[in-house]
Image (cartoon, rainbow, N blue to C red; front, side, top):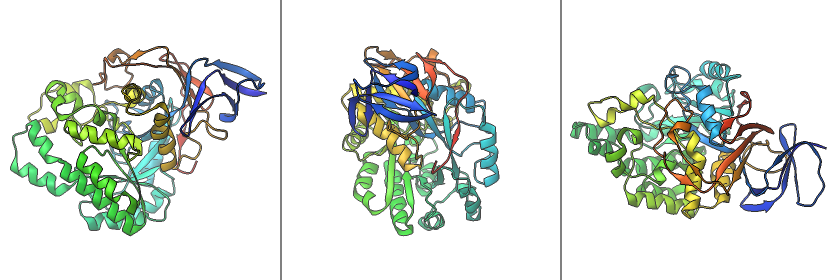
Length: 443
């Protein structure tokens, strides 16, 4: 007899959709039972007429702890994730202090213990002191991040030589290297030319040229070093074209974000600070190029770059548009925005499982995550296609408060969220205490 059985649903896994009952034991999927076969369990979740998706993995999120907890913390951020069907969050290292040493990563993990509503994997950052890397890698972070622009000097790798040296030190470690593809020289040059503080000046400081050049540099350096890389937040037609042409030369993957698949720079005029982030939003042609890349599988992962700020910070007056704190919440709206793409015919339900669960798990070394198959963690979403859902600001659990996606309606509602076999959300409300755990690369 199984511990738990999820009955009557349609399982989405590896590009297929089929009726099956999901049998769960000791937090993992024990079997997929075909309709009509006999199975007994101590507990049963009725999912008749529903879709079963693997729990989503957000591979790019900022939980803001330590040091920035007025914006978010481990509890509030993972609460938002749970309500949105994100059962694993990969937390970025740009808090205060940045997670650049083994000691700081150890401290961060200790802070998170017992406070997580979903599972969390931690990403570390490479500083210019590359001697710190071996001790960091011993803790098996899910990635090491490498920044090429717009960061403090201690973490800035602004030349091809610097990027190559860092990637060479990380080659052979098995650790994925996340690279944000900017260009510090363009940032400096445009800033000197236009000091107006306008939206146009902000856009000019981070043009598609910087992204395209950064992607090319990252891929060439990775090919030379023999390292594994993941390119962050592609969002321009130029960047997509460079990626298409060069991606085969290295072991590389790429992500984009939901906001870059819907909004354009024109939306700054009406939504302003709510959408201000880096890289900046582009033109409609860039959105279409990203959607085309998503359709033909040139984009590997969709992640949110959940980067919350307090409502007071976002609504304050600033001398320049560039000074507005950059970032927006996304953990709770990842699933609804993906469902919006399904409703618009851009992707299908199996694509959500692939780009928001299976491929993030595989790329970041989460061997027990990302699929609805025997042996994997029983992280699953029960989605009811008979009940539409409208995104509402009042429902947001993040300390950031309002979301720019408020008011959007999608055709399906998230009915239940199950984490390692335990129900953690039912109809938009937490149904269990903090059951999240820390996950590491290779586990």
